[in-house]
Image (cartoon, rainbow, N blue to C red; front, side, top):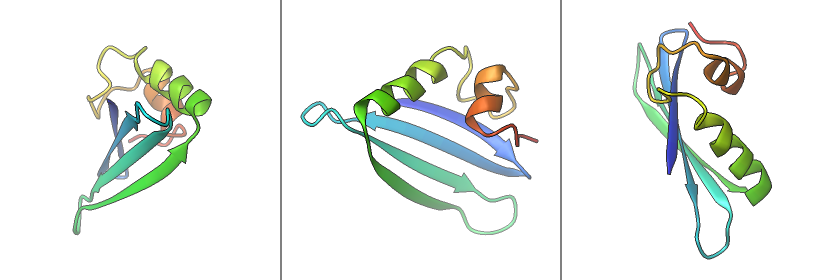
Length: 84
């Protein structure tokens, strides 16, 4: 399990990647904590192993992936250069 957090227009996004040990596919849980309004969550899967592993390895390059205020290259790229 690997997570990354970012803030976009005041909303906090937390994406957590899970790898299934049996099928070797990934699932990502996406939580959106809205600045105004109700929080919401969703799941995206299956993510093929090569794609999921590449994302996880990239996230691990950040020393503070759960810091929503981090503006390193990893965070910027992961959130499409849309961070606050």
